[in-house]
Length: 131
Image (tube, rainbow, N blue to C red; front, side):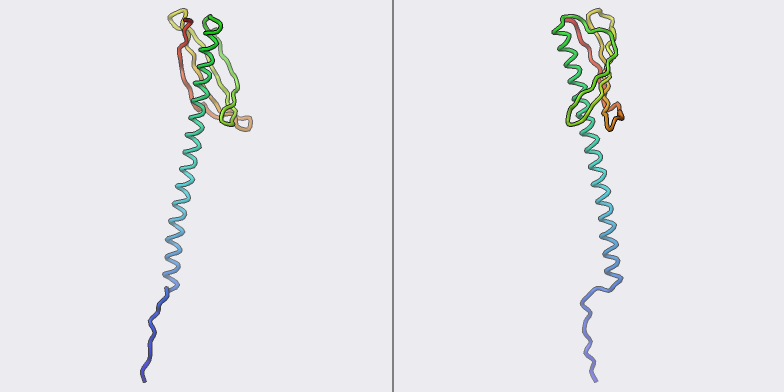
């Protein structure tokens, strides 16, 4: 009596489980990397806008000195600004230099998120002269 043996053409249960495990591991790694990349992008965007806010504030201080034709007053100042759909807190301090017509201005920028200041996200220093 001759037995006709068919060849098995499918996968065994263990092979299917190993394949699922490999795909699940790869999916988890890819998902975590995408999450890391999106967080880095958010942080970079936040710092870039904070730098623009600081530069804009420095330019405003420079222009106000040109309009008033007087050196900046030595003072500490806190103002709010809106840029990029976000609220920002700008701390600036104007101080003397060795020259009477030249002032140093230090600027720090914080993001205000739900009433909480986050940062400083950027800080710059500049010099503004009377003439």
